[in-house]
Image (tube, rainbow over all chains, first blue to last red; front, side, top):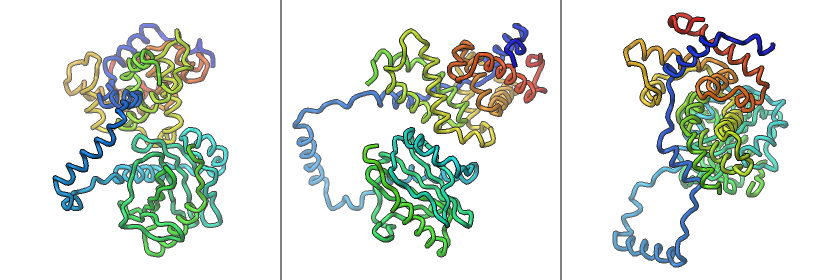
Length: 235
Length: 174
């Protein structure tokens, strides 16, 4: 269609623009967003060469004075919880709105790796029991993530997420030994979740395989996914 | 590290970018992530910006491309803005607001919801052209389509909004 067909009365156009200006809510950026953006461009201040040593000494002194034996009882902040919530949310969205596109995975994968900065020289491509149905870039907790979605022969969806620099520390409790690996296995809102680290990536595998029988299958999928993943260093 | 002057100029458009991001993602925290990622990319590729061209349009282009990369799957979700978002939106309007009687508040909600129901291609073009007042050529560049397509989408977007709001009031009728 040609542009001429879409001319409108200038008065009508002005009325429409005025209506939008007056009635459409405008959203102002929160102050913390500006601060976060500026922070990404501010180089860290260089400390004098002796600063780390002095800082360590002072910290040790304070620790000794305040009472080292009490420290094990101090509550530890859970660095894992926010990113786990984001993983759960991403999996839920995938379950609700995800569109299987197995035919597009091989075309999309290189672009997704480039977009996320997470390069994989190899990953689990599916087999007779589990099919790879999608690959997508995501942002989790402000960090780029690569999401691979699988579907097993019974129709369960599994989301495998790799996040760079998530800064999570994994607790020792809740680890399970699977072949040569010791990932954390936990339950979140009715879903089973594996969490582990590979190089500088935090990795998550989540699904609704929760019953005892399903869990053993979930562990098999974990092993396939974990064994096949090869990360390109510093990609 | 971007030139401080470039950084300052880019940050002048933060509110406009965030506003578009909210209408694209329909979610405040995702809008923040989207805008932050947009600035990260803009700063990283600031050497590619041609001085003398429109920085605002360039930033909008990066924001839309980033949205398509990371959030496009969201377009399959049903469109809505929840009441909390709308309440926040009312508080943060920086246009001179009309008196906040019941009808006016309802009108804000209706227009915001109606806009959210438009397909992304229509919504973005309408916001860029009619709210941000970019030229048709700039909108065409951002959207990667001919000016004629921009005109037709604006026309159709208005038609659809009229359809959504057909019982809304005299001033929105042709």
